[in-house]
Amino acid sequence: MVNTILTIAVVIMMLALMLTLYRFIKGPTASDRLISFDVMTVSSLSLIALIAKFSERIIYLDVALVYGLLSFLGVIIVARYFEKGI
Image (cartoon, rainbow, N blue to C red):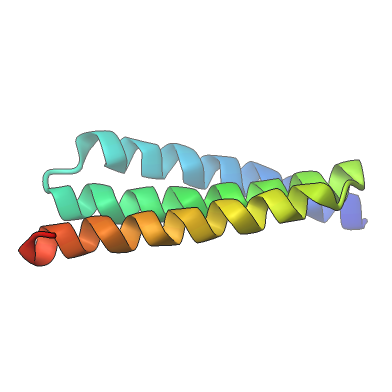
């Protein structure tokens, strides 16, 4: 039962990644692209966590943590650049 729910979650997250990838490519403004990049990062973080659960490898959670921190810093730097320049 739990594996079925997690499999459905993987499918939903993949769909979310595809929709935000479309917004990333077609976004009319740079801020739309930045927000879609952040959403793709969060979706991929959840996918990494689900892969860690399925494969029973805890090291993937460390990878997800580092990826999340680097993504957060990247989005903050780009948002600051858009706001007033570095």
